[in-house]
Image 1: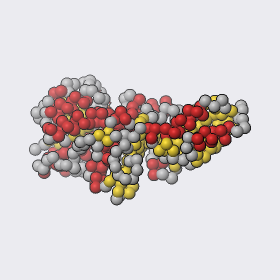
Image 2: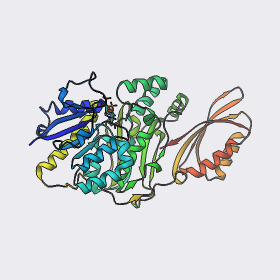
Image 3: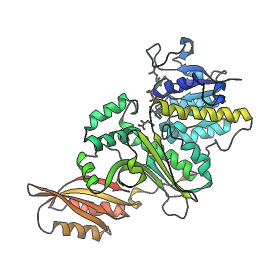
Image 4: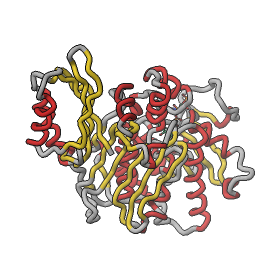
Length: 430
Ligand code: NAP
Ligand code: HSE
């Protein structure tokens, strides 16, 4: 018997999902067991990218999540509310849920998964991280036999698209952002992309799966790309780096005690030879490091209609497959954590840093900076004098791996030096 799908949202992702469901030929045979039952939108009628029978539409989304004929609810409307409430209502009505909504899952995952376990239904989230790249299923299944030490990557297509074009063309941030929105990559409110919030949602989800515990979303350190300047992109290039917005979740040591982990998002100087350095445009990549597998990288289109719909429908297929065997719940599809993992305070994180300073062109200033960093146990890898203009010198300092708190204390002192006129940028280095 066909499984009826109720679609909440027919925007970029919802349209892609409907297209696949309505054109199953040449895809997995189980797709023919899925039938589009209802479509919920905010405004109807309105011109749409797909032509669907009028009878499928409703603007009352409650009628979808409470409809006894709907078996699986696909939430691709976005936002926190009413998405969270509709997901919970669907679960309460015994429906399986597929969602692409990382904002809801990273904040309300605990509530949602507890409700799903109690109701005996699946909540699937492949599209919430990495767009079309299969990364959630591998973490739950193939990689789960490993002890994971780190999961890191480029998980926001919009910012990677913007940084790549800034790198390639030296283009203007605002114009490139407009292009990203027109291409359907950026969220309706691009703040979540540009300020790193979307990447922080995603790394919280990946870290929970990789390390087997809940992550407090509010504890994730998050810095976006608004302050990444053309100057830093160009200096980084000269030093052998590209700048990427990285999301990082890492154990503090290799002893595999999954507690006090680093979970962070920030623009990062990535050495040009690193696998993540060549991930460009809207593509995403997630690098997983585990024992015994070593390093494995997932790469592909991180946003957009087709790729994201592919991930959503793969979840529908997994549910259909499990239901067809009658052996439920399938533990490899589940996602239950019974404890919260503590996140390391920023000051304790050990990392390399890049800082650009403007100083007066006077003798002894470089020595003074070196002494101050040394007094705080901040070991320097290089100090490069970039330019001299109007009696002012531009310096770029790159540290070895140092404690971030110690570095910040040194920098606070340095900012007070009469020779230091400005500190235009501070970035992390991988
Ligand atoms: P979108 O293009 O803005 O589409 C949202 C859809 O939901 C629209 O059809 C809209 O109806 C409907 N909707 C929104 N709020 C509603 C409400 N309160 N009541 C009824 N209908 C409502 O969004 P999207 O880009 O497809 O993204 C959907 C979800 O997928 C988000 O959680 C997003 O983070 C996630 N995601 C997106 C991508 C991507 O590349 N776009 C990739 C991965 C994950 P109308 O059409 O009537 O306005
Ligand atoms: N706005 C998101 C991005 C969509 O640019 O990556 C995919 O989650």
